[in-house]
Image (cartoon, rainbow, N blue to C red; front, side, top):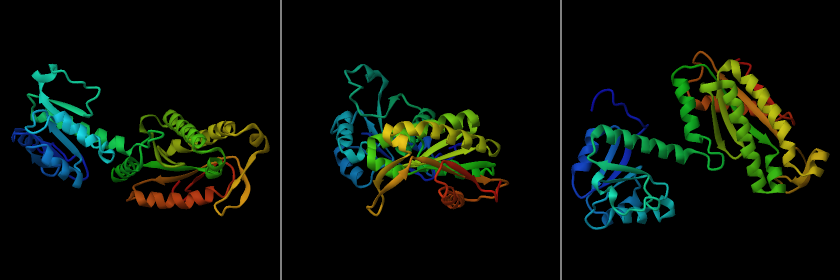
Length: 319
């Protein structure tokens, strides 16, 4: 392994290789260092299934030419278990066998590796498969925006590089009361609308350095250069306030509030939804860990929520 091959992941990735011979596992040892992957190699498919369910790997590699069960049948057995449907599977076969009558639309494999196979190609294809699986699992299922793992990773990466940046935490006020009255489907439409506003605004203002993530529920994050974040906040607040009233029935929109039940079960009036944004700055390497940014943002969000209307609050101690 050359020195330029750096570990791609924060921990060694567990890879289960099912192949009748030792060549495939040996090729993995050539392509990756022990700091990058841990390989479990088995020659028979059926004996591997129970072990796989007990200790799932990060990637399952299945040879077309298993001795005891067709490789694609084993893949189907694994993917039929709902808990393991998200487990990425790489399927290995001879290039000459591609002409076989295989229904690739029905084959539940995530990557195809064809022999003859070299170590550099194996490294590239497997690394891409693992990265793609990580992004897919982390993405918010509704908005498809990066989730917590990607958000934390991006913040910590910027901190470690000692880059200046502004980190904005945004969430919706009175979203629960809207959901309670209008239902989750209509609530999801509001979340999708919010995501579109954030993505379109942040990208137009911040360009290539912009980042938008979806923590979950009605909580979002965006990252911008320090000198661009206030412009983005103003635009997000303006767009949200222009659009969100149209998600209410005409009568509620005219009244400017809705009747719903609070967390204690009491019926009361709630204003139309608003968006609150808390902005933390990292300047001159002040932050050393993403948790510091989160803690500062939580304090600012409480201040922002004191205002019943959409607003943003900047951490003046760092501005």
